[in-house]
Image (cartoon, rainbow over the protein chains, first blue to last red):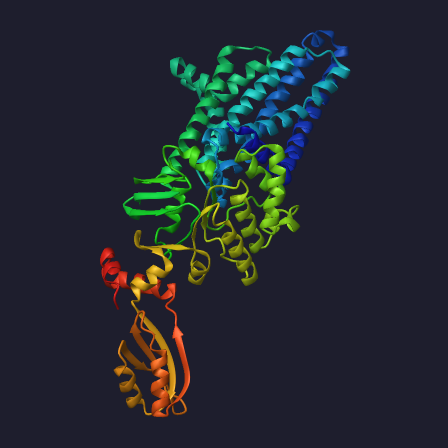
Length: 255
Length: 326
């Protein structure tokens, strides 16, 4: 399996074109804005609670800074990740480079793995750089490390799912915008499924709730590491990648 | 080296190629000719393992392009039409990527990439973004990626399109230099190019092979006569008659006369050289012989005859090859 050269090529393309730089900049800017406003709000609440000890008992830096931060970051990712993945196959198809790529002695699976891992690496870099925020918190307050780590694991798994969906959408079209919009729409639908769960109630409600992308991420940021949530993301991603392989194969036959 | 056996490819209900069979022996350079939409690119894509055929078998270097696709892909270099490259990559890293994907080790790769950049004359732009290169350079980078792994078989779809005359000559001599160790199949629109570069030719029209073989054989098959052009000052009707009387001459046609001289096109049986007799005749009759020239039948005429004949003969392929006589 020659995954490595494909991976290197994709990383090179991310960083020689402005894509990676723009995504990183915008992402860190917005995430940083969220962090600073949440952290400011928390410090003000701390000052107030210095006068009111009863209120102070409720204060918990992990729960009131990191948890909302993770949830805000996942919304930014929902908007940004389709733009990171839209290029992967759609652009190769539009430019015709796929014709060369798929006639080199590499299996479709290796091409897919290389591309997927490149997007995942960029994503890991994105969320990795936000580790600065908990580091700042640690400087000022006592932070529980466990929930932060599970929170990051949750982000990583969720991002891996986003990317898998994005890669699949990108393999379906030769238009990057279509790929991005499809990804965004699919993710959004799975995101908001949990909302309708409340109205549906009963068994259907539980099913809808289980399908929701958001629902599973929440427990990670609470510090809960549940195999059910891990398996949800892994299965979701694997299914999307499997469909991508099928879609690549189908495209070959259609010519 | 390349064997294609009853290959058919359908796009939905439309057959792009039908029952195509040909073979190319090792070390040969073969030109693949046909009008636009004849099925050249489809055939080449199948050979390059980009897409499977609907039916039929194609073998490259002894391996089935469908069942043993990886083995085939290791042994080919492919240059698709329109030369798809990554505009956001630089030339040297791009060629390094291709070499790596084709499984060439690190140290070997550096040497190969440098070598191929020299041969394709792109070394001077190796640090430029491919998207910023001129068409000619991009074409040569495309060719470089095809030959970087030193493959046994090269499949080149229109390798000289969009180049200036000097570059065309350079690329042609590059391709020519590949003959011997490499088997090359190249498609082109430029017919003289085929005569210059290729040993054999395959002509495809409307998805079916209409002629194949060495160029000389094809020309002979389609034009069993030799042709002369002469310019003579003399009474046209007498000239026509006297020339006609020479044994072996099949027809004489006069073209626009000018200044008392007239041009004649003479068809003679192949193998009969009537030039000396025409000269003797003119001298004897005291006509002024201004020009006497043998006109070579070109592949272009063969091609036009086949493709045009195809259309009028309602696609009866074998017949048009078999008849061959004018």
